[in-house]
Amino acid sequence: MADYVCVPGHKKEIMAVHDAMDVLNGKWKISILSSICYYNERRFSDILNDVTGISNKMLSKELKELEMNKLLKRTVLDTQPISVQYKLTEYGMTLQTIINNLAVWGMEHRRVITGK
Image 1 (cartoon, rainbow, N blue to C red):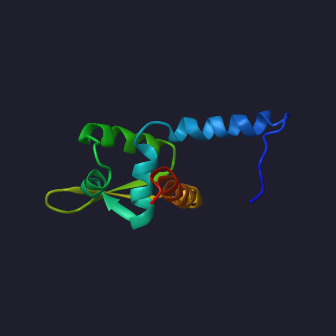
Image 2: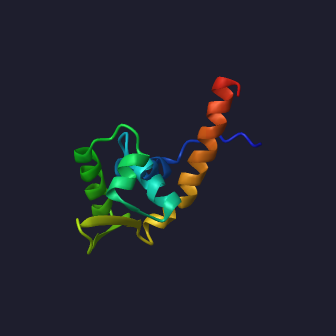
């Protein structure tokens, strides 16, 4: 595997990473996006079950921010009681490769750290 070295003169790329992290920052957003990414569409309660430790209030806040950044589409379903479904937008789907790569890296990291 090649060694990647950050060379001088990459201010634009570093700023782009900063901008991306500004949108995806926090403890929960990547986990929320991965829940929706892996299942295609998820109801609020499904995401709440997938993302261990998140509160209803925090999930609601994070979903609104992700929707505001055009990564998610929120659909109110005509059910009793009313339920809400979330799906990645076409733009949000551009994160699928990143999420898959993070999953692969995370599994490898766990193996390296635990030796299993």
